[in-house]
Image 1: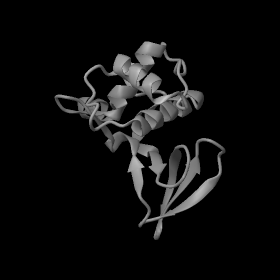
Image 2: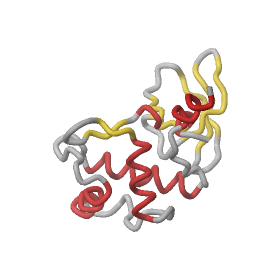
Image 3: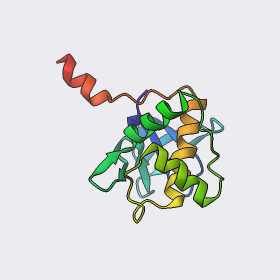
Image 4: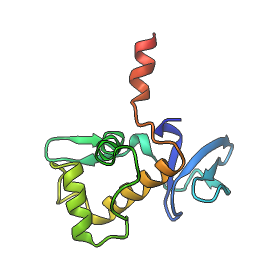
Length: 139
């Protein structure tokens, strides 16, 4: 499963997997505890495949940031906790993405990225290949 079906729901911890759509929104399953929740259309929801990180040159898709972390950690969980002090988080992220825009990428963003990466690795969902390129090449 690609990042197209993985969601971040504002006000809710962790990540969610899109289960099905309903008339009033959709049903999502927590990757942390497996509980299903109903999410309304007015909720602030982000699809991981649509998130990008600011760099000094461009916006880099979150998938590519995850790939950089995966290479650094050799496919394992991160060597740093998302609860580490701000300076340690920034040093770690600088190793992963040396040209990230320090003025627009905050410590809270880095915490989320590290936490999300670790959740995906723990759930064996760490395939960060670009599915849209695969679809285009098959046609």
